[in-house]
Amino acid sequence: MTLIDLSHPLEHGVETYPGFPAPVMQAHIGYDESTEMIAEGREFGIDLITLVGGSATYIDAPRHMDRHGADIAALPLDRLVDVFAVVVPAPADGRREYLPADFDGLDLTGRAVLLATGWDRHWATPAYGTGSPYLGPAAAHRLVQARPAFVGIDAVLLDDVDDPDPRPLREAHVSLLGAGIAIVENMTGLTTLPWTGTRVTAVPAAVRGVGSFPVRVFARAD
Image 1 (cartoon, rainbow, N blue to C red):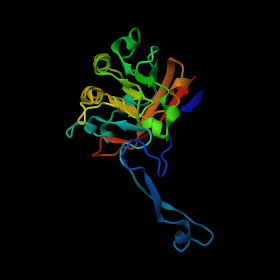
Image 2: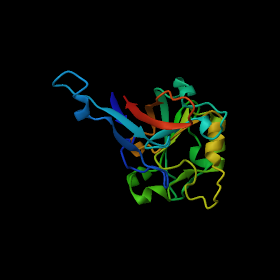
Image 3: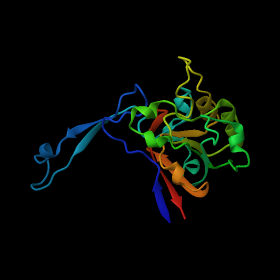
Image 4: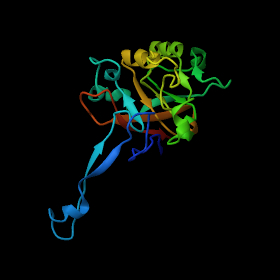
């Protein structure tokens, strides 16, 4: 059995979404300070972390797009742990938008549907925040009908990050989250996975009252 990490590290100062603040990590109790609070010769550190929920690799719960929706703590573990994955490569004709036809012939029900665009190669660079492939509205509705366990992508946004509308509809988010299907964004390494047969786990901390939170995602390849 091989475990494959599909998560970007959560790092101080590394921006995830254009214009959103980067995580800030600082000492609440530093190692030097701690020596006065513990036995001689020992030390400890207590960290203070400030971040937006959508930092590094993160998961969206229905509450992200609906104030009355289920929060991160309410996400069902049986849809996030050891789920068979279906890896869907970027459209072969070079278009950015995934269409319903890109999912023809795939067994999607109860699976983790992973959009392997390869955009993670731009992570932590200015190029990452623009031009990435995305799940089109029609394809999102197709996935809702198929009832996958969750949907993930190795890009900054499941919807079109370059939508020219200043108040975009975010159809993929609204459709999937409205149907109770979680979304994982900013994954990495998806293009290295086999198209089928891999099991994936994506479990965040059980945080109440928020709609997005960083998540550690990994694949198990037997």
